[in-house]
Image (tube, rainbow, N blue to C red; front, top):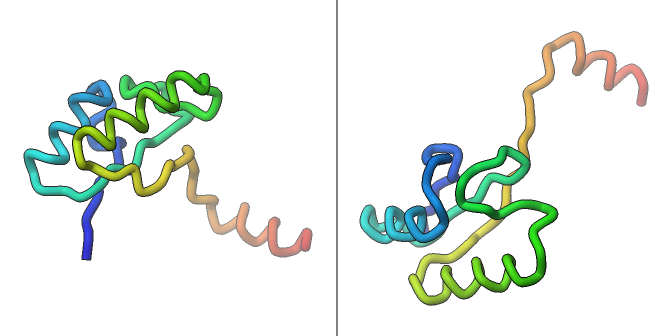
Length: 87
């Protein structure tokens, strides 16, 4: 089994710092959270150059980017029931 952590836990770190932290604590990967203006710089609208840079940083560090997470929310019971009724 491999372990990763979500950058929600360290939004103030840049990508190099996130990867170093993952390595320091023995994680195999990270899950950058996007659409939250975190310092790591991974965003949906990141340029191709930025994406290549982040990919190379991860490769060089030996830490995988196992997924990218978007902001989400848990709907209230009323919101859930409205959604189910609308289907």
